[in-house]
Image 1 (cartoon, rainbow, N blue to C red):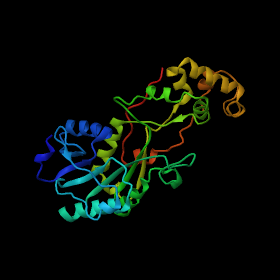
Image 2: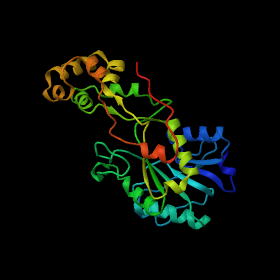
Image 3: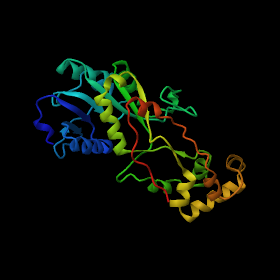
Image 4: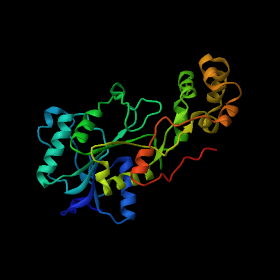
Length: 284
């Protein structure tokens, strides 16, 4: 779709096409739902637009080339309350009425074990400052969708395993085995459902995962290097904390015993919007 030619209201405007946006565009195209999307540099019919992140440049945000949309999805962190407020004010001043605002975020600040969308939230874990924008969105009756472990297309968990090459990194995964995931296709379905049932979403935070979790030990056994697996076996045998947490037996025995329970609880989202995730990681 050529976003530059849109003059009437459209269902969804995607601010920051990005990785998640491509899955949403694919879904919207399949369903013949109109949309527009922005990128920093205009490509393939997108709108060239960028939100300032500096308070000094946010007294008024330029929305002159943004089309009117029922729902505006923001896919990137907004680090300034001033800039988020200016964006909403400028956009709603131009078009009038109430826009449905959706902001994507991470699950990092949800520190409870287990933890659902009601918290607790540890703001000290928000190292980027993205919660500043979230506060404004919620205050203005928008919604924040916290997603965990995005994967799909070129983002494959098997390619994440080599990142944990040191003994310290492997030890951390042995002691915190849960890997929460959600596929980009399910994120797109979640966003569309919020758009269509926004009265259920407004003013709320939501957590979206695939409902379960994967076991990092199983991922190491399937996709780890010989050195990673050797290090993991040594830790299970000789590290007191690992042995206490995992018990006796080989890595394979530990995986077979199971016991890896999701820390993040996303049931409230799927139940509220009458959906269920469709995509799940297959580990050999």
